[in-house]
Image 1 (cartoon, one colour):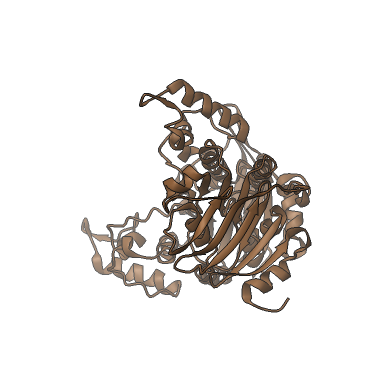
Image 2 (cartoon, one colour; image 1 turned 45 degrees about the vertical axis):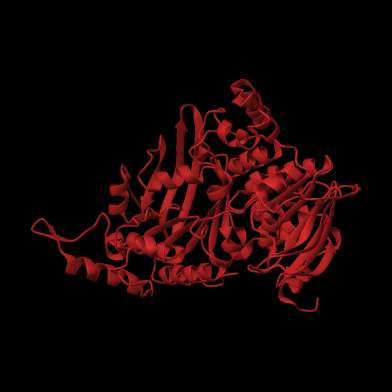
Length: 502
């Protein structure tokens, strides 16, 4: 936990009683927020809690129906993004808006390009970019094209752009979504440095472990209203979850199965580039969770079983029959369905409709004589929306407009439309809020109760232990321990990750 103290206790930004309706839907209900100069303040809540609307109001993108915003005690009107910028508020959105064909320097100066006599002052632009990168402790060449940078470098470029305006309030929306653990550590070092310079940072994230590591104070929103605020050092993860979802954290995980059926999935000596000669059995009605450090082979195992990555050796059997062939089509035909980790890149077509996405894996079953039945496709979509609790305006809504949790439900609906015997799920709740997590957990438990054998990978230890019947720990491509989830604890599981005696 971050034990550094804010540099002062004066409120720099005060939001009081903000309300906002969209076509009769109440997005904000008298929301409150107080943020101090020189602190990192976590803004928490489920999708739909009002966080995004509040951020858009502070960014000048949405005008509230009522309420006040004060900076240094003075009321301000943030009628446009430019007005918010002039007031000293900058937002680093999850989608970084990096222009890949422009240089690092041009991206940093975007919107504030120095000019002289109507022409770009390239020397001033270069000085501006170098100054901001030096402030962040970065040595990225300013003449490189931004499209060739790593995710952490692109994040630094976007962060440097926000600092060009000398922002006093910096809002970061899910900034670590595309970063590795080491890159997150580096980002946090920079955010703490900015905090210590007196910048007020509002940090929006679903990752509570990050919040407790980084933040000084927190505010929780639910149903458009502020329901809790306080010091991070004086609360617990369970307290925050309780405030976010309005129920006890233990209620997130449905009861485990009382018994399981026969072996459905059998893995014999499966090997890949990291995984080496691994054996595994999974029973009907069982959820087996695979845990391990990044690079341990945990995600590769699912790719090998699904046919998304070619096996170098070994066999996969479903209901006692070997999977014929090694590709995705062969695995699907054998009854193995796979939900990848990167659902936005590999699981859904963001521009396609809910119907397009749910039916794409079942076109043969929905077709007669080579022609797909639009009626049957619509019936399947409507049944899936009801069964999975997908919150959408209707079957024709583009999936890219849905929340992360509802996108994940669409992916599950797509693969489960084929009624697979085995479901492989990589990071089922990454980037999903706590309330949507509970729904995903309920769906997975319902599937296991119906006899589906489920294998999941998760980097979330409470999820790993709370959802599974068995926990398999993988290190260096091999199984090093197997634990009954109801007797496992985080310390024991972590000991297996790092190869230490528990």
